[in-house]
Image (cartoon, rainbow, N blue to C red):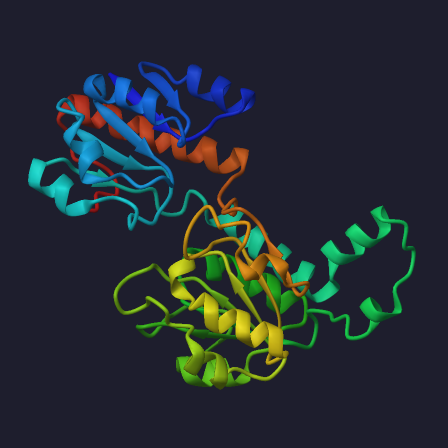
Length: 310
């Protein structure tokens, strides 16, 4: 079975892919379109990561029998084109939850403690900077609002509570066995010192953090986004960060990826950014490849697929 792993891979990741039993995995960097075009005609299964899986890509793969998302969000896959061909699409819920939860916590701390700015200052020869010392914060005593209460917030909530935070969360349905208090989104925005986004990108969540939502947030709040860039109106966010309406932001995802070097977000000193690597750990890969390989086995055996989206 020919698998195309559509993502750049370093030596460690390539070695992990090479030893998966029963599968031939071809690594195609997400910016190597020439190689992709050569691989697609013989591709049986596409292991899709982040680069958009378009209708044109699907049309170039006549043998394609499965699109396996390595991760959760399927908004970067042309689901209608897959459905028209009868190609199932599966994802891997839960495999990256621990990794994303840890980066989310890291971004909260990095913004509050101004870690990036201190790091850059020290490397530039500045041992102390009184301007950076003013307003440095701790998590303890703060109210953290989690927008969504899926696998990632369920990992984060008890950690935040143990660190002395008051945890609020907003979810579409009542939740049981929770840490934290469920409130309406408006109440969460108004009360939270830190707002962290953990919902999928859909029509109803697109630009959910717009100028009106920002205006409803607590003055001096911090926004964390490790979910999807399209959840946030980036222009409104930049305006709020420039004006001081928001104190800072920690962002792993952006409206357009990769983010342009000229994007004003990258010029703001109160923003900590990472290049959509919240999911990217060896633990995530090990869990993901085990399930993705199982779905390939099931596909060959004619058995029901795990975590089928369509």
